[in-house]
Length: 250
Image (cartoon, rainbow, N blue to C red; front, side):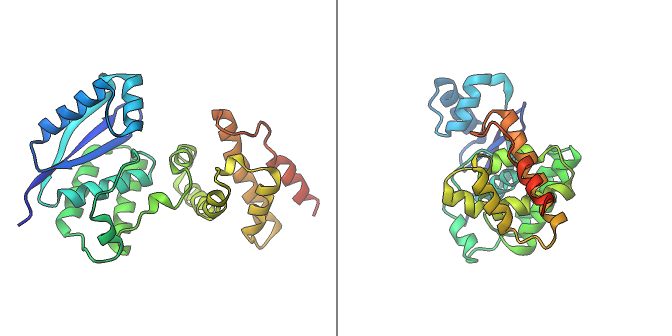
């Protein structure tokens, strides 16, 4: 019989990013171990450690959130869900993920109930709440998939998407998913593409009208402009303006 355990979280209160863990031991004891590791600078999750070292303990919330026999699956789903909306730390997914991906393991109803309760109690902003419930519904209806990996550099792209309405975000996500293959091949984000590489990608979208292509160029241009403003792009000039002028002449 599966031993009961707990799921716990370590949340950056300033950004909302959340690290999840599970244990069959006492949850508070495990959280204390994490805190000691963070204070000593030896936490295994490097991105969590960097933020803790910069911000200090007061910026973080340590809490046991779920007690269940399905603690491993609850942790797995929470990691995936928060990663999909850009609020998760990059984490190892445990030994059950491959069974889920292969369809060898079903997610019990109890897990969905526990996750829904967690979302309702902890994510009160309308945008986050709706996005997480929609992603949970997607997993329930279509099966578990690592969708957090189908967009290259998803964390930064989610940062860009946050200021837009859901309808715009969905269209941009489709474009980013199509860009992923090109980005992986080039081993760089879309914002570091050269003019020629960007033009090849835009052309590959096979938009069926000039208006559609110009819209693709406009949105890609806004992404590059955002990356330049954030100081992460190798490009210093938004070449999509020139690309738009080229298509206007056609």
